[in-house]
Length: 150
Image 1: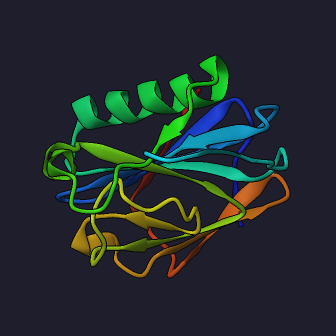
Image 2: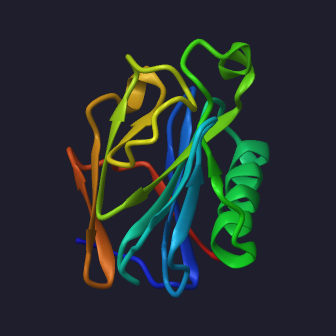
Image 3: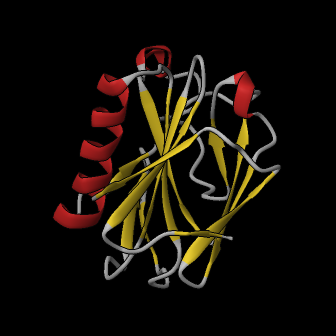
C-alpha cells in the first residue's frame, strides 16, 4: 500500500503521460453529466479521483492538480462527451472516480460515463489503481511516482 492522505496528491510519472490521484475526502455526491442526463455518484471518503493527462512534465502536473481541485473542492461535475464527439481528439486530460480505476488506451477519451475505466497513455495501459483505507494500491506497481501537498 502507498499512503495517501486527503491533503496529498500522488503523480504517476511517465515519459508521455501523467496520472494524478487524490482521495475524494468529503466530496460526495459527484455529479456526472452526459448529453442526455445527469446522475449522482455517491462515494466514500477513501475513494479516489483520478486524472489522466496526455502529456508529461510540471505543466501537466499543475493542470491535473487544477482539474482535481475543481472537481473535489469547487464541486464541478464530470462531463461525458457523446461517442464520436470531435472534441475528444483535443482533450488534454480525463477524469474518473471510484474505489478502483483501470487505465486503458483502447477507449476514446472523455466518452465513458463508467467510472471504473480511464483513458491513458500506452505506458500505463492495464494499470489498476485501487483505493485502500488511507492509501492506494497500484497493480502492477509503478516506481516513478511523486507526492505533493494538495
